[in-house]
Length: 166
Image (cartoon, rainbow, N blue to C red):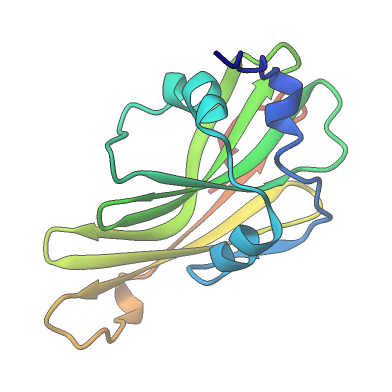
């Protein structure tokens, strides 16, 4: 019987290539990440994602996107998660030992009742995370009403926390 090699936290973190910022996260960018990055192994998902994600089912899929550059005391990654009618990008931070610091959904497409929420995000060089959410009613032929758009700015701090600036 073959023995499965132990996967370390460093192996997991290095599945997310370090990327220079700024970078945009839209519903189309996940296809670039899925072409350029190797998929996470089942063992990596079980050891490092399952303990921090309480909404997994047999249809859930993950794509490693990238790792923030120049983090000293923590690791910051972006993970794309596809679930049933929900596609989300998360910024997830861990301390150097692999313990979760914070996890925040920052972009994606979600179905909420009879509305479609689309969030696009830019992560800037200074680790600010600027997002805009557009809401479309299902019966509006995917036409946006600018009055329903919301924007927010988050900041990734030097200790790995994600705080609201707006």
